[in-house]
Length: 124
Image (cartoon, rainbow, N blue to C red; front, side, top):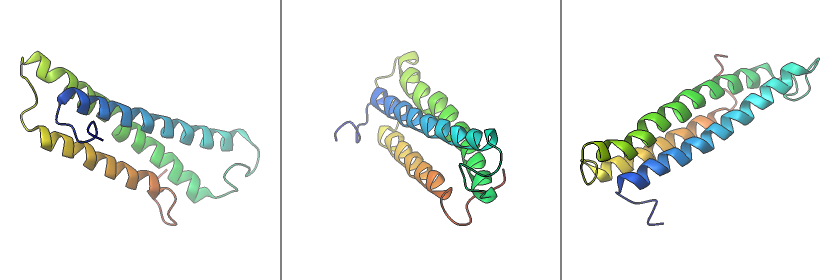
């Protein structure tokens, strides 16, 4: 529990990276689902629900960009490396840094659950 509420920049960077890897795995399974649907003739995997397919593709793209690539580079890598490069003992506002990680986590939960709503994001 103490690692989750830490103010040490290395632990926060690792939390960002771990959450991003989890999201990368979720996005991978999204891509597996819609590629399986495209590989079959007729509706098989998603039961012919075009709206769910579009929601899945949209969520996959958003999770890859805003849940995997950006947090790994900006959240994880910068939290690990920036204080070391500046010879600083820690980040300037460590509690705000940790809070931003948890706000990111809450937003990601809403993004992932948004696929399963009736009128989810479906821009395709």
